[in-house]
Image (cartoon, rainbow, N blue to C red; front, side):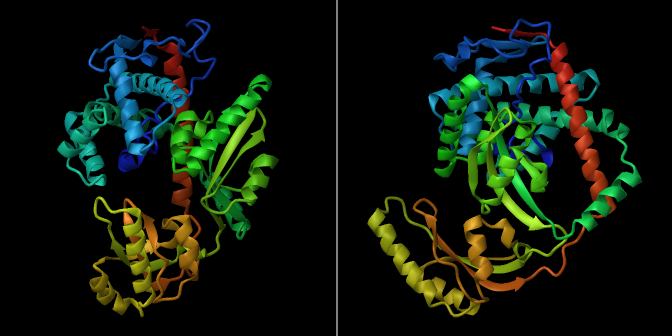
Length: 447
């Protein structure tokens, strides 16, 4: 949603963590509010048992009312799209984060309107339709789904409006004044060439600050998060809603980095990780970090995981009501059948014999696949199949390798790409400062 700063071009991915617009409050942003600064009173009515049909104001932001229903519907959307059920304590923290996010969202929309920047209903409709298509639904079907989980398309439409308005404001008021010199670009390209062959890591991080008296409590909270992630909860959900680092708006994504730029404790932990693994909680200055290794590569060198594959997938689904014994029996028969596959030309016949569905894909790279499958496919020969994989809900499937185009060279970024990346970084930094100033000047009344 990015997991939660909505990027219009990738808004469906944003929905995976649709509440990540929630930003941590900067303690010194507002010296004119009560001693809690921009933080919220601990006794907000939102944490009680509120009738969802009774709309009560939770906060008033420059005369714009944010209701308890607004918060509840956004929380419901986040949880449904993440398919995650939090503990009562986590739910309270998530509600607080979402309220903060709605306040920021309101400030962004208000600032855009004050600059005569508006988003039309038609533009919101187009974005919502793209989101629905990513979930293989019509806008009407998707709206019905949101209502069924306790949310509404109104909540999503407002989030879309906030994202579009803020991005438009940045493009008109910030981006034109960002300058990146040719010498800066050349310097970066020269460093990349000099670093050819150096290993880089694509990491995501959750940072949890602490004080000496809370150290054990925060460490235990980090352990609970890791346990839940290993049971299937998305890393991005925790990064977007509980991390206290600036990367929370990007699902904790640190991007491609060299380990030398990290504290020693994080360097040591990252070197022990395989792709797809989690490490932590790791003690760092001021708190603890949890790391997730997305990928790794060597700068400027071809990577086998960039090989483009020609695959045929065979899959069978289990009918509703299938018992565990029946699923095991069907999976065993499926495994025996795929062992007899003699090249991709044999796939159609085998699929017909066992009642399997066949799907072809000739444009996927190894690194786009789940980490468990990457290592298997790196070792497969053309014509061979992976072991069966799947779940009782989704059925089982196998991938047959029909062809592989290995990467010959690793292209260095061109000057335009480097310049665009630098400009984006500076626009994001200026955007953070603008939002900080809006928070400082806002009149926010909590009810």
